Image (cartoon, rainbow, N blue to C red; front, side, top):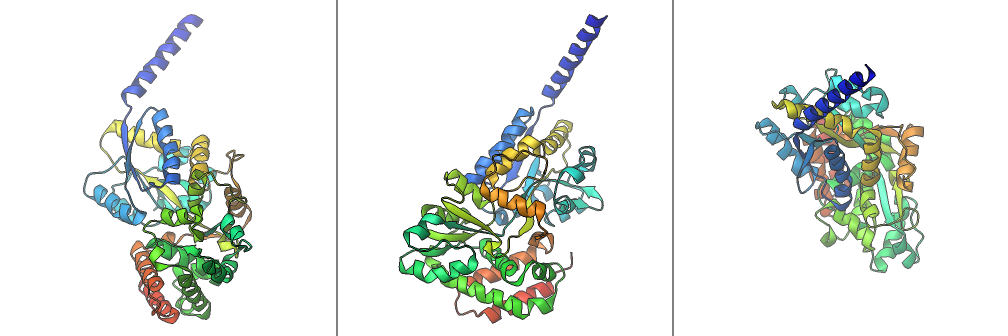
Length: 415
């Protein structure tokens, strides 16, 4: 009797395996992870999906998220959906959700208890509309970092900066030695720099008051006036002819020693890792620009468009589950430079930069929403355009730029 039960069990296992193999699916995944560090990280996701029995079909879109987002959204609205797509937490997918074009992941989220195993709560909240979960958060990214090359400062006989103010003071001496104090990329990185300076100078509370609460008194006030003066100071540190097209190119100038510093999100850490540089030895990573250690809750999420093929539907749910497993979370985030969504993973291999971020996340109240979680994409693009214009044209005064900024905040729709 025991042998019969064993045989029956083996037959059932074989049957289930055969069914699983028969239902294996190709999943086209769109994303904009194309730099060296990003490519190394996304390969971990691809490997995990392939090991699950399905096939990751890479749909990388060259350029930034500003390039990729309209393409992704247009494809889904146009009836040509991919199997899965990266987006950022926030309001980018609202139109798609309202149109019923994205898969409801609520049952899976409840079954796997995402509400308790993923943190901070704001990330899953950004995936939730009318009580239903439509995306899976895969990491926590923060924009609030300054990256400096230690060798550049040592060779120039200058003490490496501990914060933004130190860099501003060191800029004339760096310039005198033919070193570019601040590497900069065009477009959204300028907006990121300004957002970081808002938090460092005016404070995280005021950042939220303006972006979320639309507090015009603060936007027009003295503290924000100091921010725009700081942007003018940053403008003076940058050689406009050396402004790069892509963020990772600006980071590359710091890695190669052609520039002393760059302000960029923690994803820059992946580029330093690919270059085999060690934090605290070859470079420094300063959260909150070294002024006040903070994190904003940006990151990446994956949505799964509604499809008709039952096999692809099953593969989508399997992929969503795979992305938040402990092993995959560790493998991906160690290479991406971001923080894992789970607190119950082994991060013995984490470098000093990731440890700094985890310390803030787990033991500090200095964590606040990302801009796209508080403001619509159109308004953010207007701010980025304004800041890019301000940054490249010295004739625009800080007061003029502040007024235009406040006007954008005033006109922004309530979310």
